[in-house]
Length: 152
Image (cartoon, rainbow, N blue to C red; front, top):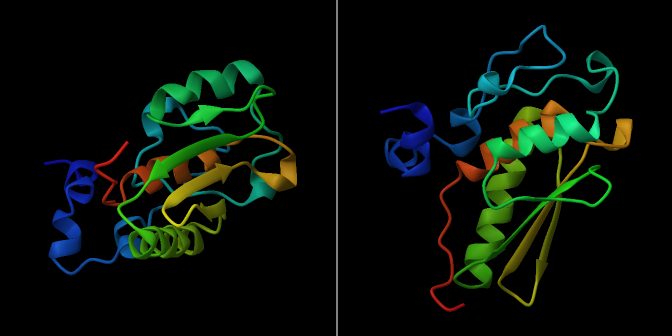
């Protein structure tokens, strides 16, 4: 079983691994990664090492890596919206995202509205657009187990 699948099913969590340690990764010297290199074991790189934000075409191509995320009209940010079981679940999920973000050194904008709706916005603010770091974070966030609402 791949590490992504194991984390996704919560297997690592049940074995005592924190989300933070499960999403801690080795750094790459390449500022721009090939799509196949972005996975839950990837590590965000410092913004100084990136140079520039992804082009609109590059950002749209990388959207194939993340399911359930939408890209802004100007291709400078990606967003995911979820309806969780309840407020406690939403707050716990936000806290687990925060742990991963701290470990990665790349921080999303996080929102809880209507007590159970979570919105996650990713962009590299320092560069005014999307970078591989945003897609790495999206993949890591997607690997965090979450209990969604059964009601639409």
